[in-house]
Amino acid sequence: MGPYLKAEGLVKTFGGLKALDGVTIEVKPSSITMVIGPNGSGKTTLINVLSGVYRPDRGRVVFNGRDITGWPPHRVYGEGLVRTFQIPAVFSRLTVLENLLVAARSNMGESILSALLKRKEWMTQEEELVEKAEGILDLLGLSSVADRRAAELSGGQMKLLEIGRALMSGAKMLLMDEPLAGVNPKLAHEVMNHIVSLRDELEISFLVVEHRLDIVLSYVDKVYAMHRGRVIAEGNPKEVISDPLVAEAYLGG
Image (tube, rainbow, N blue to C red; front, side):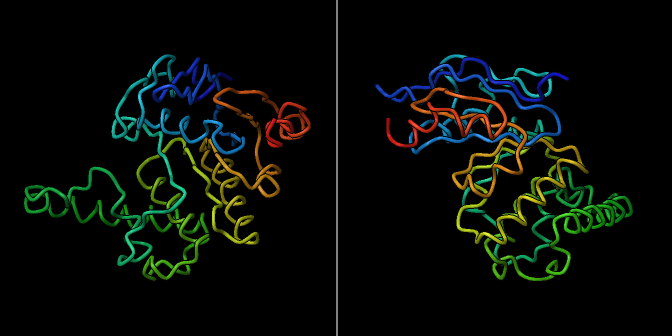
């Protein structure tokens, strides 16, 4: 089976700094791929290029068979390639359920004419969206807090809520920038277990940038190690971690 996401020869420079220097990666369907590397290795720049925040100077990005190189973020998002952030940007005054509902696309209630002239269809759609949101909350273990304000959630629950909103928007693949940052170890394992469940049950693909290797490595299918804008190793977690080049990069070599 071919890759779901493929980046080929990505180059991105900022002045005299080459943040990405010919990066090529692949993410297979229904898989969890991880990108590791010391600070300044280019991981976040890679996520920014893949999600459309930055346009690459060279190279291309293909997602689900379509060349999306240089697409703006809203088009990339609309295609189903959705990014989550290190610090979740939830609607703190809305409930957990409401946070998911506002992420749904093409809601008829957002149009005055549709809301007035197609009230029956609108109400039916609202019921369907609530059912979908409740199903997602159940998958993420958030059903018990559905009616709480998002501001009352723990850090780990907020990360799961952000994943839920991405799924509600129709995401086919998630780009996750440090999803475990600020999350205690127990909740961090819960987050990763939910990610594995989403991969297996919904066939969602994930590209994860994360520093907490001791927690994440046992959950992922493939790892890319980066250093100074280049991929220096790739393979299964055990192969990459035991690579001398990776050890040297983390030690400052």
